[in-house]
Length: 219
Image (cartoon, rainbow, N blue to C red; front, side, top):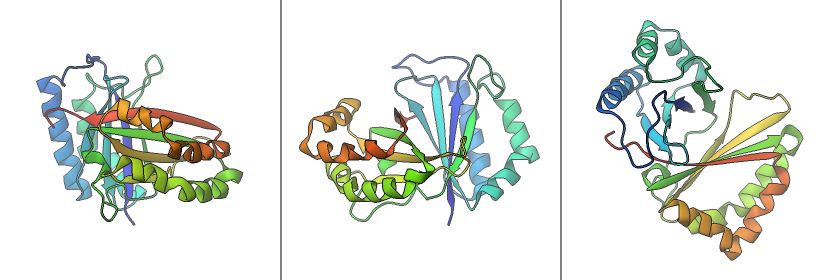
C-alpha cells in the first residue's frame, strides 16, 4: 500500500494572515510539485497553517518510504533544495527546520459517501502522541467514537495514519485530518453532545497537537 508523505516547511519570510504567497515562491512550489509528481507518479498538494501562515505543508504519496528516500538522494532533489535555500529553513535555525515523515496509510482515499477531506475550506491536523502500550486501547476507542466526528464533519470525510518514523521509541503518533467550514466550525464541535463521548480518546493520549490548514492560494 502507498504511504503518505507529510512535510512541514517553515518559511524564512513570514506571511501575514490574509496574504498569499509571493509570486516567485509560487513559481518555485509549482516547479517542485512537477518534480515530485514525476518522481512519485502521484499528486502533491500544498497547504498553509492558519495559526502560523509562515508554515507551509506538502502532502503527497509514494509507493513506499524507500521509494521516497531514493528520490531524496537524487540530483533532482538536490536541485530543489538549492532552489529553496533562500525561502525555507532547510537546516535548523532558531528552532526552525524543514521536517518530513510518512504515514502508514493513504490519506488520499475518499470514504464512501463523503467528500475528500482536503477539499474542505479548513482542515484540522491533529497529532495524537500515544504510549506504545496504549496503542491498542487507543485504536479501539477511536474506532468506537470515530462516527461522532464523521457525523459532525459531513460532508467531508475523516482520514488518518500512524507515523512511520517516530521520534520516541516509547511513543507512537496518530495523525488525523478532518474537514470543516471554518476554525470556528471546528471549535463548535466541543459544544456538542457527541464531543462528550468523543473526548474519551484523551484518556489514551500522552500529548496532543492541533493545527488548522488551508489550501495555498494560487496553487
